[in-house]
Image 1 (cartoon, rainbow, N blue to C red):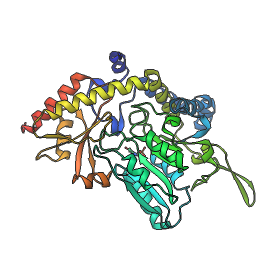
Image 2: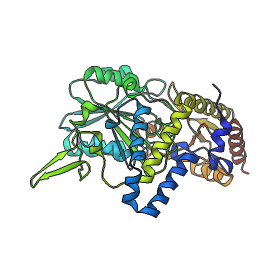
Image 3: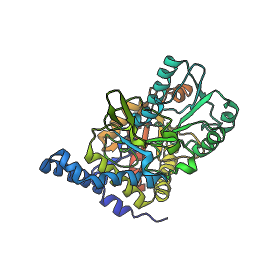
Image 4: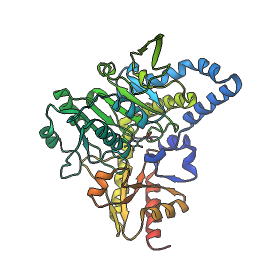
Amino acid sequence: MSFDIERARAQTPGCTERIHFNACGAALMPTPVVDALKQHIDLEARMGGYEAADAAAQQTESTYSAIARMLGCHSNEIAVVENATRGWDMVFYAMPFKRGDRILTCTAEYGSNYIAYLQMARRTGAIIEAIPDDDRGQVDVDALRELIDEHVKLISITHVPTNGGLVNPAAEIGALARQHGIPFLLDACQSAGQMPLDVSELQVDMLSATSRKFLRGPRGMGFVYVREAMIERLEPPFLDNHAATWISRSAFHVREDARRFENWECNVAAKIALGVAVDYALDWGLEAIEARVTALADALRARLDALGGVRVRDRGRRRCGIVSFTVADEAPERVVRALCERGIHASVSRVTSTRLDMQGRGLDALVRAGVHYYNTEEEVERFVAALDDIMRGN
Ligand SMILES: *Cc1c(COP(=O)(O)O)cnc(C)c1O
């Protein structure tokens, strides 16, 4: 598959100055996204925020249809919120748990989600259980099958963890969940924008994602998908004038679509720009993006493996654009700082973000490099050469 890398880089201003391997933190925005942001802010400056929002109402609506196209769902099943966590929270905290209910999650679960389980368990007596991994470090679907009984009220996992290249077998998990009528919530923060996500194929009931990572959208935006049949079963933990209507002194009516999980005030420029980012990704094609991202990440893993003293830490059968590693006798923080001094961006992922996984592997922190399609093989070489240089004490 040929990829017009020149066009991708020409439309990515950040490419020229730095080697940005931090798409899993916040990717570089492409020019059309930056332009959309700036244009709406200019409009607000000229017209005022409310008037600008009215004038751009159609563009805001396009964001819903773009996300729906990407996920293979309807626009009314999408809520656009300020980040992925808040979208995830709005559906998770809407679920009624009672003592003895079981929540099944994965060892790669994201910290914020796990904190919510702990709070819910403390409040209600629900039980949190991690599905064991198979020998490759991904969710063991056979083990999940064994765990399922009538007390399981939610299966909630992270698709691609924040700390590595693993891609959990979400579609197989979704098939099991659907077969048993158990709601399935997928944290797709790190997978959105780097691989195709189809809600029918994944058989998810709820899915959350963020704008700024592999989707290359602006910061401060996220969204959540809720399958139509689930929406009316989930009353959001917070309601406002947008999520509900005050219809009499003592009554309100919660809206019927997924926008019941939103709140009224939002960053309109970022909301429009998120839609532009999604369309931009669809334009490249998510299969093509995944092929290129995976090839770059595999190349980086191979080159790192060949460096003595570096240990690649990615798990799973299917791997994606996040490459995690540790360096013998070097703290990840120091490695990332030294890379940054050389104009190369990676990040540190700590035990507090994915405690079950990291603690299980005896890891406190690791270096995380997230490559995107605008990166090049030459940048991979320069990354590895810089790391080699750092390890030699230069
Ligand atoms: C980054 C991340 C989140 C949080 O996304 P926000 O938009 O910052 O709320 C959730 N889950 C995973 C796996 C992540 O990597």
